[in-house]
Amino acid sequence: MNKKYRKAIIAGNWKMNMLPTEVKPFTEELRPLLPRQKTCEVALCVPHTHISPLRRSLKDSRIAVGAEDVSVHDKGAFTGEVAADMLADLGVHYVIVGHSERRANHAENDFMVGAKAAAVLEKGMNPIICVGETLEQRERGLTMEHIGYQVLAALSAVPDEKVRQCVIAYEPIWAIGTGKTATPEEAEEVCEGIRAIIRSRHGARVARSVSILYGGSMNAKKAKELLSMPDIDGGIIGGASLKPADFAKIIDAVAEVSEED
Image (cartoon, rainbow, N blue to C red; front, side):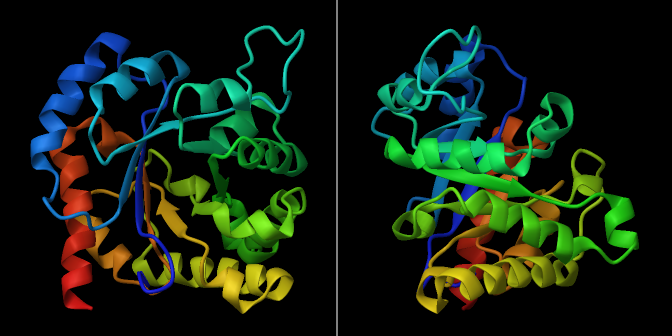
């Protein structure tokens, strides 16, 4: 992390878990576990049905409300879709776009991800743009070629002056939900490469201000090592974000790393 230039962010991604009625008990358990001093931005990205109860439960809290996806469309005959301005109206701050599960299960391509990121920014929210490679791509030495394309394609839809408002989340597909985690050195190599790609297109000042997160089975045991890397500015957390104690330990890891810097 480099908190001199950019925010540290820990974002939970609940996926299709929990019930709206379980939100309040979860937040009541989590809030006392958080550090008294704000050491990073904390967000919970939840299903659309959970956003309103989460916002009510987090009143007067430092935790930001996030969504797991957004429509590329503004409005119209798109049954089941949720537009960016609908999320903004609910008080959403972060929106995940381009998660590998959306890409694989809903045929979302890189340019659609960019259009979603642009829609989120237009409504005053921050997109968390997910990128990542498969195990086969890694083994064939195509990691940075693939991820570089994903980053450039997504940011091509974003106005230059808004790139620094984007968050990039590197999630190796082979590590999501598998219990496998890239080593700190492997994760840093990719995150450093992502920053270099942004630098080449948008300049050093913008590149050093963009928060880059690591995802892919980050848990309390591995968080500190990963967060100690200079280009890893936080994490996007799956299963561990559903357990208040585990999620709080990952947030504590940010404070531990900050104290050592």
